[in-house]
Image (cartoon, rainbow, N blue to C red; front, side):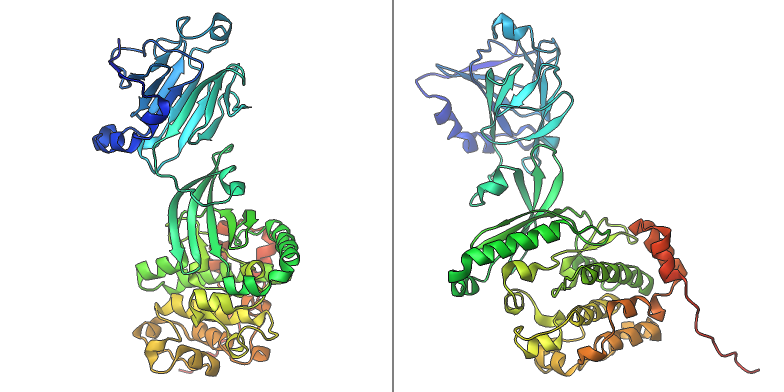
Length: 481
């Protein structure tokens, strides 16, 4: 017989729920109460075996079970934490209850991990009236109603005792996704880990704050802007490339844009550079080649990225040889038509001179991405920036004049071919800057060993990679003896 605790007085379920945090805080870390099941149309008189880690809390009208172990199971079988019998359920319902009907899990009982419910019954476990499906799993969220064997037999209400990370987010997001921990943040917003409730798939949700001044100044065109954003979203969701982060969903609100993106477990390129101080030339070349492939794909689709920087380049894993993906492509189209917001939100150190000269309002071409790629490559190879306010004059003025140098000691170990490519890309005259196709055909990237690694990581077809491998090395002069 499990330990039982009776409560006195007329306190009901809601009053107990309001006191959840004081109870959680009093628990030792290895036995923390991370969730609670409240009875609904069901009366439980005892739990499972005498060694069950769970206990029933009774009120005058209902009961609840504290969840403080990694897994909780319920069903007719004697090995369950909650054994369902004729004392608990009507016979017509009990006959449809499986030996193990469902389990609820939270890895390591950690409040930062999602809660999963798995349906193990042919007759079904239902969440909010929707059948999960035998051997299938879904995310369980606060106040979800669990029904057994039939959607109308509502047996339990689940209470999640972790902090609510979804406060203030639109219903279009919270109805579909469990919003989890913060992955990163910046001046314009932040990135959170989210889980699709029905599939349990992980995604990264980027929340970008709009330029409120721009929004108010275009107030008369809100309907047109909304239609434009939805149209652009459709285009972005159709993009398919191994080096472009896939966007699965977008929600456009007056103050923010919510993008649900492919989750990349290796962090961003900026943190990889900072962690290593700089990247070796072979690694820089492998990453740069993948970035160029992404930019070529976007340019071929008529999309100019306009915000290429290490923060917006994500890595699949923590391995040095890893797949790389460009994110935030076309973000400017969702927020406003110029680059002013991005310059204000982040750093202008990767922005092309023609953008700074016109204040982002002039007509400029895809060559702005080539300039940004040059700055990113410079940073990868040296761990430093080509332009900075710390170099004496304002960085914006350095960029407009194209004033930079290979002064850091790291450049002594970098090949002349790499430096030459950087010089071509960091040309203040966009007409003289190479196209992305020309960059991909540059001698520095004609490296069979690197191309082989890229082929494996990007899973490109042989024909796609052969176009870059079919080259002739320039003749070399033999030294006279």
